[in-house]
Each structure stands twice: as C-alpha cells, then as structure tokens.
Image (cartoon, rainbow, N blue to C red; front, top):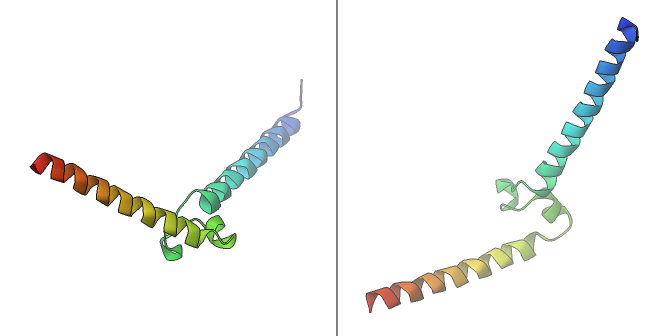
Length: 79
C-alpha cells in the first residue's frame, strides 16, 4: 500500500502530464486548425510557412466556381 504522500505525488504528476497534453493539443489547434482574422483567415502555420497566398487564391478559385455553378443552376430553374 502506497503512502499518502506517494499517492498525492502520483496524482500531481498525472495532472501535470494531463495539463501538458492539453496545452500541446491547444497549441496544435491554435496554430494549425484555427483561422485568424488578422491573418486574412489563414492559420498561423500557413502564414509562417508561406502558404497564406496559396490558400487565399485556392479559396477565391473555389468561390468563383461555386458562384458560377449556382448561376447555372438558377438559369436552369428559371428557363
């Protein structure tokens, strides 16, 4: 049977590992998944690694294609 001090120490170490994992998960999400308005809605990783302009151009291309597709659908329904 472990002493009370050992049990407390184990629980604190487990909590510290948990906390470290949660911080790592938050940093991963913040830098690689969360879009930042101040960075033109790209992730900090995209901005840092020079992918921001490529991401923005791809979004614009998709937006233009979507608008054209919707116009065609509207014309078909209106005809």
